[in-house]
Image 1 (cartoon, rainbow, N blue to C red):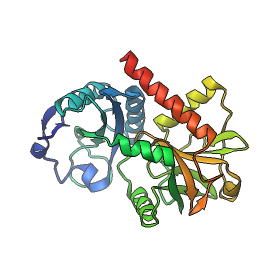
Image 2: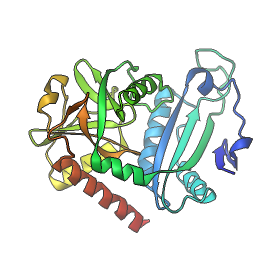
Image 3: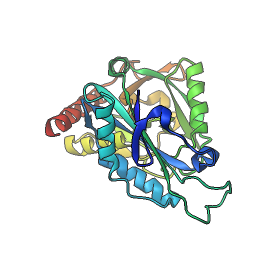
Image 4: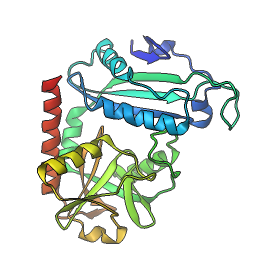
Length: 287
């Protein structure tokens, strides 16, 4: 039996009952987070909780403090036998159950909270990070509040499916000629030996792995620029990578079936991968 967390209680997954009137079901009126665990140690959980709180404030949910989620995540790992190896913990918070109406309910409902932990295939991830992936570009048809990690992911689903149909692992959204981010990752490129990534805005998610990489660049004096990566400049890009909780730092070796650089993971990508590995090990040692 898989143990999950639902509205204040730990229970068997089969015992969970979500109302068909839940606004998360009817409107995708909710948020989610995915936290990575290495050998039972959560990686940057407070950053994930802070991002969830950011979204809750902007969605005007009745609850914005989720500090106890860190302890809930640890209990889920323990109850599901996931304290060794790699795992992920998923949290979802919706506005709650109410009679269907586009405007907020007059009587503010309690948010619906659901969480579960799952084993993560780290070996496959290591292979992908070493070899790199193929990616495609797609027009960005998402809404204009991508800084909130909402459950409204239809555009992301369609874009990722388009990637799968072209034997690619990720799709990069393009808006006004600028490559912004992936369907479930942030995006970075190396141009003239400088790491470039889009500045934080309402059009990209403030990724936790992205934040960690920025810290690496400041600490290790790796040249970093916050700016646009134009589609027209792709042929001159030296390296590309997608970064995120599950992808960590994964090089893109082909974009739209054309090689990036020499078609292999680049020097800066490998350096960042090594730095991230060291940071994960440091967190485990200090746990």
